[in-house]
Amino acid sequence: DSTHITYGVATLGFATPAIQVEGSVFTGREPNEERWGIETPRFDSWSLRGTWNPSPSLAMQVSHGFLKEPEAFHPGENEHRTTASVHWNNGRGLSATGAFSAKNRDPGATLTAWLAELNWNIDDHHTLFGRIENVKNDELFPDHDDPLHDVPFRVSKFQAGYAYRLPISGPLNLALGGSIAAFDKPRALDAAYGRNPIGATVFARLSIGH
Image 1 (cartoon, rainbow, N blue to C red):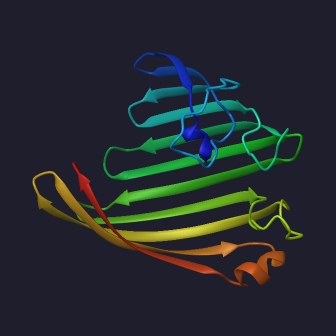
Image 2: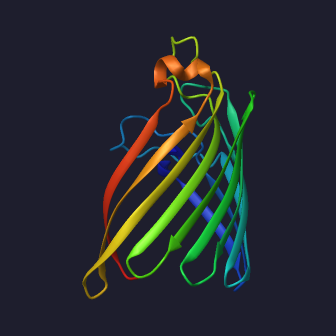
């Protein structure tokens, strides 16, 4: 999302060991293509975030934000964005996350999405992971002249993968792995994306620490 590179952000927060509350004001409109120039901050948008850690193994958060005309191609259209998530980690290699988001265009429709993911570090070398995503998206056809441009479609993604970690030296680690993904989508997307699209990924990740 382009709002993370807007010019001008001010944040104020309060934190305890279990609770954190933050508020920010910033510029909602994405910057222009002249990224080397510095634009005047507008501070016309805001966001609120709250985090609660009831135990060392559990973290929950909610957030809401108002963005003033974030998209240059949609002048006069504001957005309200809401997120909520829960993360659990048993401290022994097993972790899970559930998350929900809603993007309400004003004027316009509300687009929602959710995900659930699981990560299992079986031992010092082997990791299994899986993820399910369900997203309602109206940006699947970027051509503004396409009749399906701005038409929302709900798409699901099912992904599973494996990684093998190799200690290199000291805190350095190298992980080699891959994943495969399948999708569930409306038939109206077949012509552009294929009837049964499948995705595959291979990766190498260098990290420091455990």
